[in-house]
Length: 322
Ligand SMILES: [Zn+2]
Image: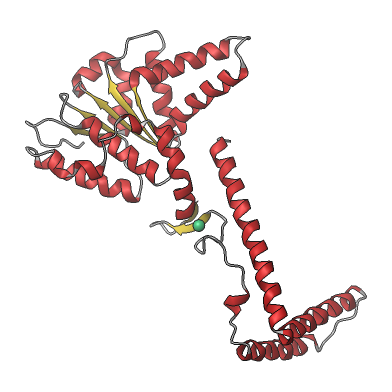
C-alpha cells in the first residue's frame, strides 16, 4: 500500500484518540460539577450490568425495559435542570462530517453507495499530492491564472476549457487526447486539470512521455538486477506504480520521445492498465491523429480511437470532439 495512505490512517487514528481523551476530560469535569448527573449515570450502568449478570444465569428481568425507561426519563430531567444537552456529553470529533473516520458514504447518480475521502482527508492529502504530481514545474498553469481568456481566438476551446474546469472540480475528467500545433495551450489545460485534482487530495501525475518511458526502462533494469540497493528499488517501483495508479496522468508531448524496442509496448501497458482501472489519462501531442497513426501503428491508435475523447487545439479548427 502507498505509504501516504498508511500515514493518513495514523493521523486519523490519532485524531480519534485525541477526541476520546478530550471527551473523557470533559465528561469527568461535568460529573464533578453535577453530582446528580453522576448518580443517575451510575444507576443506569448498574441496572444494565445487573440485568446482564442475571441473563448469564439464565434469568430474564422482565421489568428491565420499564426500569430503564424510568431512569432515562429521570436523567433527561436532570440534564434539563443542569442546562445540558446530549450534545454536551458527546465526543466532539475534529471533523464532524466523518467523525474522524476519514471517509464519507456518497450515493452516485445510479443510486449505488460508495465510500469516498472526506473533505478533511482531502485537505490533509493535498500538499503531498501537489508535491508528487510534478505540477510545481509549471507554476503558472492553473485555472486561476488561465481563465477562458487564455484562448482568445477560439470559442470552442474556451468552451472546452470551461467545461473541463467544471468537471475537474467535481468528478472524473474523461480520457482525452489534446492534439494540434504547439503553443495553443494543450499542456496548460492538462496541467491545470492535474493541479485541480491534486488540490483536492486526489493523486495526479504530470510527466513527459519520454520521461515516463525512462521510468519503465529503469524499472525493467532494477527487476533484472540482483545487486540494486533496495531503497532505489523501492523508489523506482513506486514511480512506476504511480504511472498506472495515479487518479489522473498527463502524458505530455507524445511523439517526441526516442523510439526504443520497448517504447510501444510500455505505452500500451500504461494505457491498458489505466483504462482497465478507470483512471483518467490525458495525452498531449503536437501530432495530428493521422500522424499518430502512422508513427505508432494500429495497436496504440486503436486504443486512442476507442477509449479517448479527442480535442483539437489550434486556431483554425473548431474543437473537434469525437
Ligand atoms: Zn472528515
